[in-house]
Image (cartoon, rainbow, N blue to C red; front, side, top):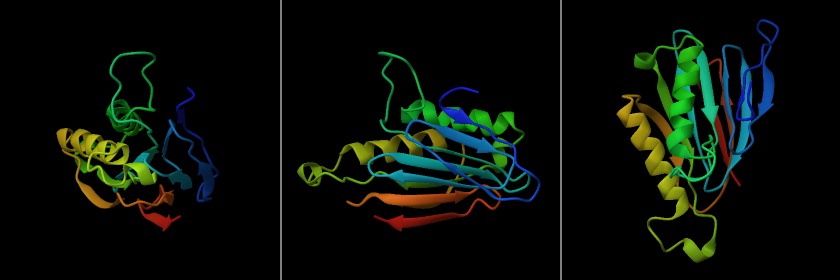
Amino acid sequence: MNDSMETIQSPAGEQLKFYLHPGQLFVSLENYAVTTILGSCVSVCLWDPLTKIAGINHFLLPHHAGDGQASSRFGNLAVRQLIEEVRALGAVQARLQAKLFGGACVLDAFRNRANHLGAKNVDVARAVLQSANIPILGEDVGGDKGRKLIFHTDSGSAWVKEL
């Protein structure tokens, strides 16, 4: 297990809770309610409806340009890593469904810019999912307010509250 990913086993049928920090990802075969808080950051939620294998990430920046350490803090790496991790647990890529959250422009000074950090984060998530042929079935992105997200790994459902 590394700093950016958590896999935790639970007693059968019990729903556990996990708080996902920025730069982390979480994958599970078990029943979890995963909570995170998003501003300009983005979370991609993946779910295989047959195996009920699910995963979620929380990335801060769109691209790792090769400078410094590569990590799941960067969208272009975090979304690919999430796909790899759910597949490693047994999810089938052709069945994966995605939901996309976050990407707000929470700073007043940048609200008049079309290509702010949040928008770039959303764009990279969409591009990686599209290149992997994973459909986005739901999203709550953009705007100027943060969000609290709770992703349920057993059903692939998500609850979002604007902050």
